[in-house]
Length: 226
Image (tube, rainbow, N blue to C red; front, side, top):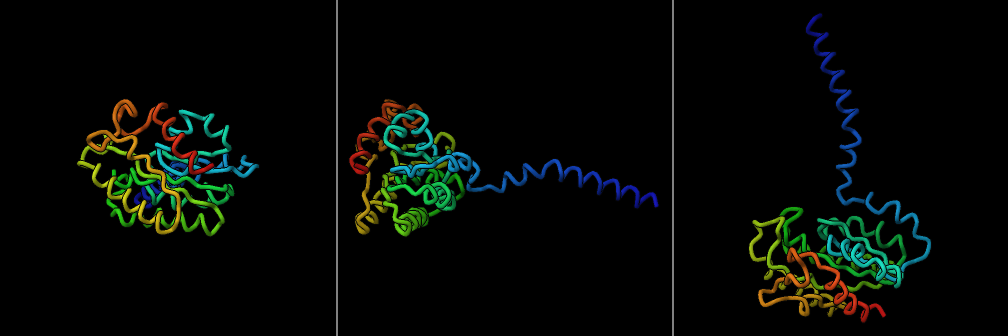
């Protein structure tokens, strides 16, 4: 009987522990981070001209220059750390359901940084292609952007010399865009330095643009949206 009492006590402790941890466990299961923009999406009552889909570079864009988005009826839907796989999963909620005229896709940096584990450039491109196909099926015009230059990732020092992979992925994105008559925005060429990285004048950490850099990107991308 004493042994049974001890087991029942352990069971009660386990139940309490599960009850305490349950909200956190559920939150951890939101792998694509649907919750990030759930409330903001509900507040969108007018279809935006364009949704900018991406990672921390897009997220930082909306934070650094919010007037660029509000003045042009654009919406930013970038989430830090996300790969093309994350973006594809949340594409319906954060793009299609907002019914924009355009979607500007800037993706691939974190795939090359292996934020979600190893992924081939072909599979990263496949995710980008799938986003374009979803957009077209819903009468949204995709605009594809070149991955910004980077000579290294400070949060992934084990990823050596990513600049070459970025160039190769950009070539693949451009080839697909040309074949499908999708606009291709080349951010890489005007921003790169002699090492095919993003110079400090544009990004203190070599990855995330400053306001001056975003202003250059804005002038470039507006030519495609107008």
